[in-house]
Amino acid sequence: MERLADNNSFFHLLTPSVKIFMTLIFIISVVSTSSYNISRLLFFLLYILLVFLMSKTNHKLLFKRYLFVLPFSFFIGIGNIFVNNKIYCCILNIPISFGLISFIGIILKSYLTVMSVFLLISTTKLHDIFAFMENIKIPKIIVNELNLTFRYIHTLADEAGNMYTAYILRSNRKKGIYIKDMGSFLGNLLLRSMDKADKVYHAMKLRGYNGEYNYSKIYKYSKSDYISFIIFFIYIVLSFYCI
Image 1 (cartoon, rainbow, N blue to C red):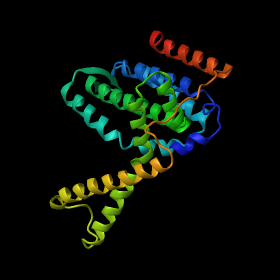
Image 2: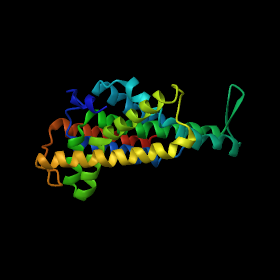
Image 3: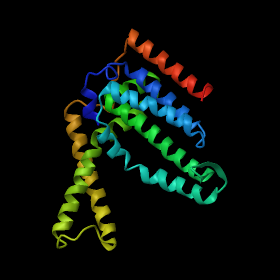
């Protein structure tokens, strides 16, 4: 998704702080909306669709990432169907319970919040996001830890992938890791990751790393930033007062 941030669409060219504030306000608005208010949640879906159109982002790619989150919201909401059987309405003589409406609302809220974050990441470079975090006086140690995590999480994934491949080749190509081997597998992964982290740290020290990143980039707001934020603010206000 980070590679998508190199595009030059209208939404990509907006100042990062404007996009971050819009995303935060949008998430707060979605979370504060009742799960039974399906009409407002569907109205919030308009923002996601417009950002997709303006940024020309691949919806299929982001939706595949969302599928990893879907099971969590699904199992959180599925219990409401059986707990709350009170009839909400009838559609074509089919009773619709409050539990089903709540379940649909939870799925919509998870999609809206997760997809808004995905769109922010796919239209804004991570360096700009960390620069914004430092500009609003978030402690440097938190910003640096997040930066290093995003930069090197793939290194841990590569180590785990190499270990998994070696394990499969030594177990007659059987799928998955046996429970009895899980402890040693995770222990070896921890030792290998610590060794890899030490090598990466020394390589960074040789290149002048002193424990801090400098995020001194200051952005100037353009007319498109002001107009976009005003339109977005009106959109949020209308969603609460008209729906």
